[in-house]
Image (cartoon, rainbow, N blue to C red; front, side):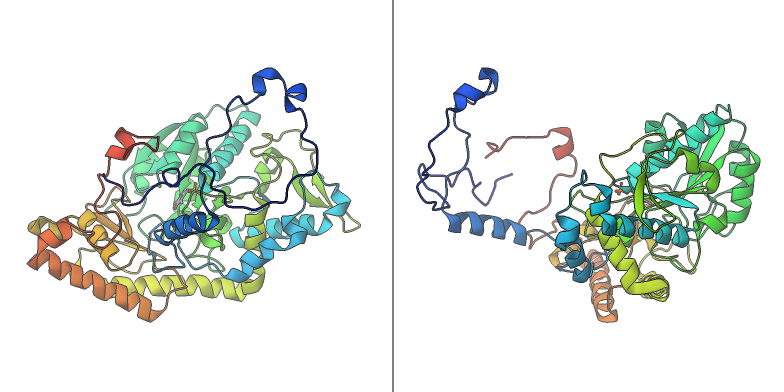
Length: 485
Ligand SMILES: *Cc1c(COP(=O)(O)O)cnc(C)c1O
């Protein structure tokens, strides 16, 4: 592919600088005298030499090519790309939070510790769990942490349980985390309603079952109505229930995993609780547990003394140890705290009600134009199948590419894996009816285009800086230097 824009290194001209500093009046130190020879840099670093204005233009231009939720609608199912109130960004930047150091003595960071303690309590309340750890840095990290807790629990009882059951609609991180935690994954197919098949679950559960990993509502946006029976089957077999709460936008203040029978939960604060995400981090994937798993939680946990002061509790002999340097991604935790406190319990419930209402509105309006594999009421997201368009030689991927021409981030496509030509749409609660209507009208227009001019979709996108990319070449043949011309 030909690049349309020079790299900053190509713009470099010897001697150009982007700063003007006064002459140094400090004598140059003899670096060579103090630095071990093998660490001395022989050549100056190869940095681009450009004017300040060129640096600014270059990076501002690149930033404009990026798409984020602050640019437009981003209905990426299973990712909850909601608008993040800027107030919470400000809270995280307050000097008292942003400028403290993890090695500071406890008495000098009582406010930060109180915030973490309160957040632990709030998240435990929201999920129906007895205790939380705030250490994990992402959803997948939370899953792995939760599975290590489950492993430690079974081992402490002298049981060797090696298998983790996941439904075929599960997020890819579930089997990956189970494998990374040393378990074998058993995948069970969903029933015709897109829910866990109880007979298949009964057949799979047994004395070697460590846990069932489930997300509810599941990745089809459907609520597992038989969750109480599901929990009973797994518990009777001696296993535990793991709740993938990456997407809790449908249930806040309405239903709690702890009440459904789950023993371990992780949340993605960067999806549900106001941290911008999508660029690779940082995130936060706190894990909550029922009381029988508390002894194994990572250490330290923030605790409160009788006198009302807070401290790091390291005295946890059965702990699985630390899962992250220091105490978690603190700035993300501040945002989540600000989010929870500014909405309050009623507000959080309203968030979930509106997220579900928005998804159902979009489903209803789009249903005549696509196949709906699992009709009925959805939760915060829903799936459509674009298989009808195959008659015109058009696939879901082409619909997604065409949406780029209209300034939308496409929905998730080809996930979950159990729906042919899948499109997974999640509007979130922060979008107006006008925004959703405009998107729906565009989708309908694209369906008509597929019928009248399929080539238009096959060649899309037409208006973006980069046209259609080869979907696999970058993964199969990575070119990792900047001389690729
Ligand atoms: C996003 C997501 C995850 C993984 O979260 P990361 O923070 O990206 O690791 C896990 N499960 C579900 C259902 C998700 O949507």
